[in-house]
Image 1 (tube, rainbow, N blue to C red):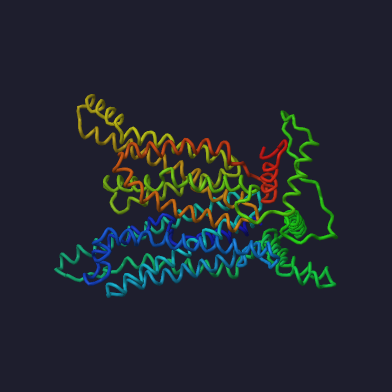
Image 2 (cartoon, helix red, strand yellow):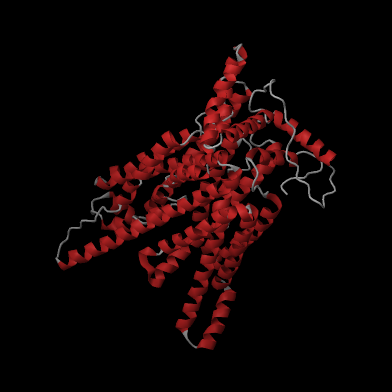
Length: 578
């Protein structure tokens, strides 16, 4: 079963970010240097000569992603309103697979617009088509980033859920490596063509619009993503149970044949479970019964009077615990009653703890300086002579560390990886603060006096900064990078999961844009050293936040995670997340 799920889902997630068009839009920087080489009458000359237009080109995809995730959030609130009024809904009316198909189509249409704009010489029309293509592609990013971790979290068995969702991040980074490598190859090809043009005194260029190849290649994985989401993978069994139950509620009440209605509503969900467990139908049926029972306890399914309520939840007792079993059972009974009629408001006090954990990680992931450190690392590598290929070793390093995180997440746990990653980030930010601040200048001056060499001073400074930046990148990819989206796929209750993940995606793109816009201003006001010092303080707070707020979810089913959060939200002694 593991091999089947890995084969299908990893192929799908590789297309989740075709050719690695990343969340922070790093790859769009690859074609920008080629814009001045295009035909002078082309709209690309306008972009190349204006920093404002270049910024808008980079930001357009993030704007599209923010808009699409906002629409998903509003749609989720509407569904929950319908559920409250017994009109159906509660779960996303589209379904996770349908969302992935829509995301793939948006990718495809957006990429066609981006690539097609290269053939338009009219300045206004070409620029408008390109910006619209970027916007549509961005909406696909928002839809896919909402659907992919949610689908993986709901489909994957607890024993490999962490590996699968973490490998999703690894495949995004792999796409970045492929995109950067293709961009470097196109750049070197353009350089050779320019040299030949000079030798043969040829003013023409066969590579004037070669940058559009970057976007044309994304059509292939986008199409594959749609094929896989449409034909190769089933819908989430949890979504199928809820959606079919909502649609058939009135028919169930009118029908005299309750057994036939139940069988019809569960057959698709059972087939979905058989996709996960193709060799053992008994396990598939047993897991489906467990999920269905948990959803009934949460009030997300109509109660079934014919099914007996099992009270055999796993007990987790520590030898040092003084809490009695009777106290714990009383607390669990209270939590179960709370789950039987869950509130539909996203900001209900019952959901405060999971929202605090999930959204808190998304916020801290962005405000600890990741976009800024990456941009400076690329700049320093470029100045060191790596040139246009500077982004390739950075992306390759990110890929290696992310694979390490994927291999360790089910052994070390989510919280331990987050703590370790933040510790590395903190050390790196302290080094960067010293290097770019007054203390760094004092230390380098002492080294200069000892070595009596200005070049050695400069070399040591660059080495220290570069090592610190790679240490930061490694810490980020070990913790915040992959684990944040793993936790968002796990901690949100089913009744608000669609809304909560959509809100997390909104915050991700909004804060990413604010950090990218605000850091240059902050740098001019207080200097780069103090800017890194602020990031260091936020990373130090992240260690505290993770240690006190984020639970360890390794090995727990989504229903068990939700029950534990529900227990924590009720008064009384707790034996949870141990």
